[in-house]
Amino acid sequence: MDPIRYPADQTIGLYARRWRIETLFREVKIALSADVLRSHSPDGVCREIVARLTAWNVVRTLMPAAAEAQIEDPLRVSFVYAIRAILNFSSALGHAPLAGIPSIYRAMLTEIASHVNPERPGRLEPRAIRRERHHYPSLRITRAQWKAQHRTA
Image (cartoon, rainbow, N blue to C red; front, side, top):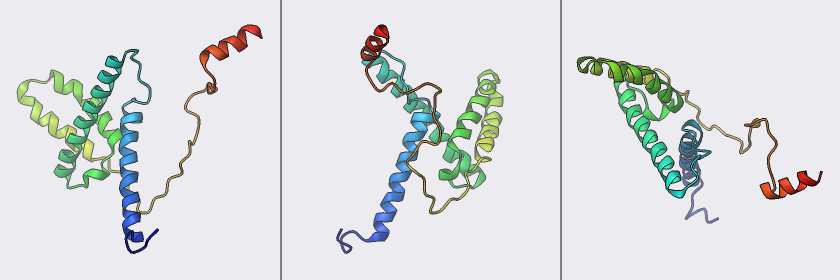
């Protein structure tokens, strides 16, 4: 609480950086579907996480290259749209003759850079869920307890 050691403007700046980190976590969890892991073994879970983080790094590596080509701020390029563009161009890149790959790659970068998130200074976001993600009620007890309750009912 000491204003000399912890000036308000620096604290606000740290909060903005922390918010940026939270959005990066959201990218991995939501955009790359890492919020639910399907493996049943610890080794499988590790492989799923590594695969998603590798995909995240590929997308995050392409975004600055795309932004540089279009002279955009790489932090404003849309992550979700970058994933969509990469998936849309992946088939063409996989089937193109070797000589055609550079032009397809440049077209993909142009497409990625064409979707820039608007500038939103001072943006405040509520820490709440806007709507339910699934149409099923939340299970707030163990499955064994639920089964025991419904066997007797």
